[in-house]
Length: 596
Image 1 (tube, rainbow, N blue to C red):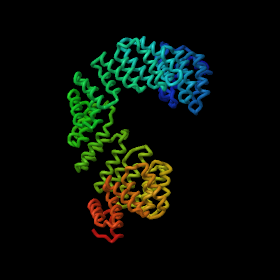
Image 2 (spheres, rainbow, N blue to C red):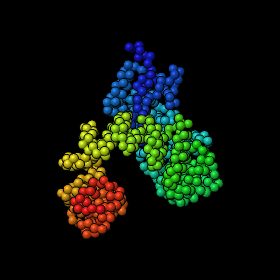
Image 3 (tube, one colour):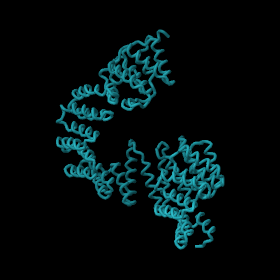
Image 4 (cartoon, rainbow, N blue to C red):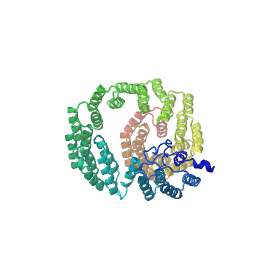
C-alpha cells in the first residue's frame, strides 16, 4: 500500500472525494444561509498544471497521512461537524498550497454559517489562486455583505481597467449587481460613483448610476442618469427600459416606451414591456395591438402567443384565446429543447372546452399533461377525475384517482381528499368518512384532511370528534379561518355556547373580512343570540357579495321573524330556483310550516 500512495497525486484525491453537493452562492452564504458545497474539480491531464477553474495547481504527492486526514475530515463533515474538518482543510491548504483545499474550507464554513472562518478561507483561496475569477467572485460577493465592503473597491477598479473595451459594459453591470446586495446602500453607491468616473462616456456607466440612485430613493437623479445613457445611445432598449423603470409612474413609463417605439419600431424587448404595462393598466385592446405587432416580426414567439391568449381571455374572447393557446402548444411541440411547461395552457384549453359543454374535449386536453415531472401533473389528473365524476361515473372517477403517480405526500393526501369528496357528493357519507379516517392514519397532521374529516363527523353526529378535529386544524394552521368558522357555525346552529361561537366566527371574519360565508355565519349567530338587526345587516352584506341559496335561507328566516314574510318568501323562492334540493331550505320551510 505504501507504494500505491506514492503514485497518487493530490488532484486524484480531490477527484476521488468529489463532494456530491451544489455550490454556495457567495452572497447568499454570507447572508447566513447554509447550502452544500460544490464538487471538487476533476483531476487534470498528467501534463496539466491547472485545475478546471484555471487555478495553477502545485504538484503534491499524496502521503498516506494526508489521505487519512482529508478522508477523515470529509467523513466528519458529513456527520455534522465543521470545526475539525475546516481546520484540517485550512492547514492542508497552507502546507500543500493547493487552492482547492482552501475553497473546500470556505465551503465548509459557509455551510456552517461561520462568516469569519469563511472569509479567512476565501482569502487563502485567493492568495493561492490569484488569477482565479471564481475565487475573486466569492470574495467580492462575501465582503459586500460585511463591514469590509471597502476591500472590494480596488478589485473592482482593477477588473474594470483590465476588461477589454467590448466587455467593459458587462463588467460594469456585474459590479452593480454584486454591490446591489450590500446592506450599506449609500456606501455602495458612493463606491460605484467613484469607480465609473473613467467611463462616463459609456451608456452602461450611467445605467449603473441610475440603478444605484433608484436603490437610494433618489428618483430624480436616477431619471437624469437614465436620460444621459439614452442620449449616448439613443437606440438602446436597455436604456429605454431603465428610464421607464426609474420614472416610477406607470403612465410616465408608458410614455417613455411609446416614444422610444416611435423611433425604434423593431425594438422587441421594449414593445413586450410596453404591452405588459398596458395589461397592468387594464388597457387590454391596446395591449393586444402591441402583442400582435410583436408576432408580425416573430410569428412563433411563444411568449407573445401565450400573452395574447391571456389577454383574449380577459377580453372574454374565448375563441381567440383558444387559437392562440393552440398555436403556443404547436410551437412548443416543434421545440423539444424549450424548457417551458405547457401545463397552464393545457388547463386553460380544458376549461374553455368545459365551459362550452365539451367534457370529452376538456378531458382530452388534460390527458396531454402526461408527464409526472410536470409541476401541474397532479392538479391536471385530479381535474380529469373531477370531470369524470361530474359526468356521473363515480367508479371511473375513483379509478382515475388510483392511476395518479406521485411520491409527494401532500399530493397523495390531496388524492385521498378528492376521493372522499366524490363519495360525499354522491351521498356515501359513511364511505367518505372511512376514506378520510384511513387517510389520517397516514397523514395525521394534514389540515385539509382534518377539516373535511371534521365536517363529515358532524354529518354523522360525531360532534365531539368534529370539534376535536377542528381544534387540531387551528393548532396546525392558526391562520385557517375556515376551521374557526366551521366550529363557530356548528355551535350556533345547535344553539349552544353562543358567546364562544360568536368569538370564533369573529376571529374568522378578522382573517377574511370579505368572505360571504363567514358573514353568513356571523349573521346566523347574531340571530341565535336574538340580535335580529345585526343578523339582518350581516346576512344582507353576505348575500350582496354572493347570492348563495343557504345565505338566502338564513336571511329569509331572519326577515320572517321580523315580520317581513313577503320578502322572506321571495328569497326562499330564489333559493329554490337555484337549488331545489337544498336541505337547509327544506328543513326551514318544514319547521316554519311554510309552502312556496
